[in-house]
Length: 349
Image (cartoon, rainbow, N blue to C red; front, side, top):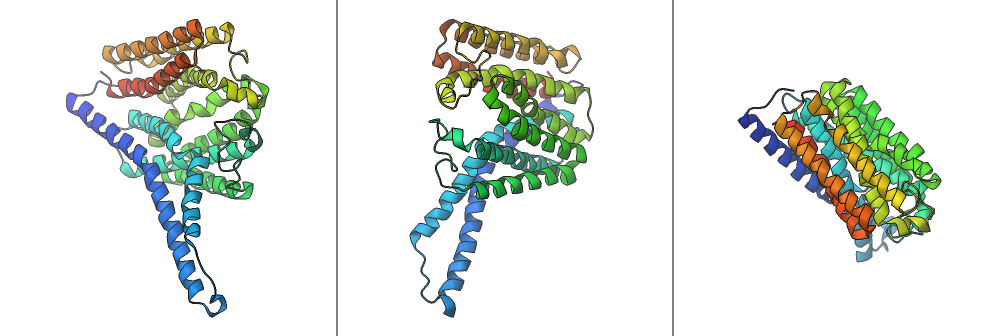
């Protein structure tokens, strides 16, 4: 990948910023759109019922309108729309790495298709885990365990999201994008989710669908696999481990209520924290592979190296303290790490 001119760098930064703002607001737009549609059809139904001779005594209360709003919010919770924005942003950065110029209709298909496939995966995950979700404080108020949504409703919502998302990726972009989306959904729902009951092996399984987004974005533009797509997958795959384990450390007590033991040894012990340190250390050379292969300049490599050292530092702090605050700091450092690294290679300084 050649170095970019200063105007090109500014253009890319502005486009990435536009996409980021869009992803932050698109969930709100989707919720508003769903609420509007729900209210529109509900009002049509009300009007028809109130003016029908067969339903002359039909009355609608304010509670019905409130119910519609809560239902849409529950769909957003079921599909984790806002969390999905991070997944889609990663896919968009992968797209930009492959793109010579931005085709906005392709970005639209990638964003919406990515949101729908991710939402479908999250929905099926909550259906499968509905019983254990009741046991954990952080999940007991989700729509299904709280009784606000039936399994049948959640199933059809998740199915609709999955079918539409894969169709958008397949027909709007290219078949390989659709296959990657379908594969990520399948592994997340039918392999990673059931394996969570069997210990830390689930983290390895979950790292595969978790690493697909940037590769999907690259393939969405290029239409084929390649070395760069594989590298993007490898970087995000390695990133999954310190990221997920920092979260697992923070919520370990809640996980234990559901018999989930997802830390490296299943426990918050020195061995687990040491493995987290080693996973953070491994992330540095893996993330520098693009630099070794000539993708990005010395500036990109320096940014990636410093970012990796920061993650490693917070993992060492966690190893020494074993505190939840340290786990939170590591978690947030990994949140920032991925977009910073991807942007560094995208700008190619």
